[in-house]
Image (cartoon, rainbow, N blue to C red; front, side, top):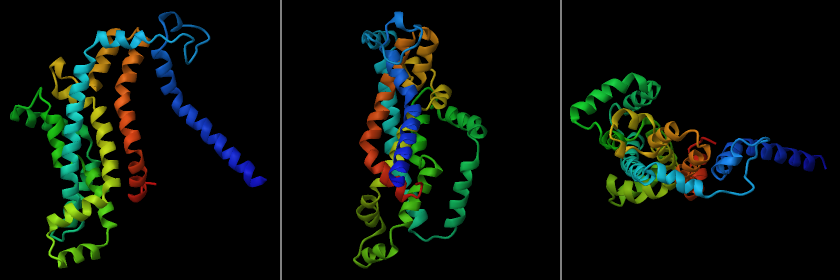
Amino acid sequence: MKVKNLYVIRRSILLIITFIYLLPFFWMIGTSLKPDSELLAYPPTIFPENPDWSNYEKALNKFPFFTYLKNSIIITIGNLIGVLISAPFVAYGFSKINWKGRNFLFAVMMASVMLPGAVTMIPVFLIYKRLGWLDTFLPLIVPAFLGGGAMNVFLIRQFFNTIPNELLEAARIDGASDFKIFFKIMLPLSKPVLALISLFTFTGSWNNYIGPLIYITSENKYPLALGMPMFMSRYGTYWNQAMAAATLTLIPTVVFFFIAQKYLIEGIKLTGLK
């Protein structure tokens, strides 16, 4: 009986915490459906009695949502491709290939995580300016082809370390090269951690505000993360339309999360984050 009561109490606490975390999400969707007359109603309500779906149409007519969506998709897919190609290669070199200075360079790479982004902002900007990449998507995509960040390499390397070296040695005895081992053995076994990296990359690229703000000047090249604040500054008093635009912006991230959810949980477990 005691065990059952403890189970009920734990479940109740979890439900309350879950509701608290989801409350802003419900408020956003509810506000996006409210007519103007209910926006400032007292006492406030989460969901309107008569949903007004035209708020979405009005929001789409007030800013170039689909242009920003296209730009966000280009930047995000470019980052996904870059990270999924380069990060496993680098991690494989740090994990399964013995070479002089490997541990030292890995430590240097990990130390770069401690470097604040503000310190490198100006030098990186000047480099891109010299390359003529300003007001293009290149500064937002090309770095992903260099690993996309030390944490990506670290997580994949940790996963590669869990794969027995005997498996690779057996493949080498059978005549497989390192490239064949990488593509035929390591990558197929790495789906969970690659899904985890993909989700981090997707959310990071989709919600990246500072990068486009620094490098993009043409309004028709803005991604959604930069277009939404502009919409809020111009039409912030139309809270229902602003929340409708925010809901539309959020949909791709939610869809991607549910698609990758299975591999994401498995990847978190295997990389030791859980």
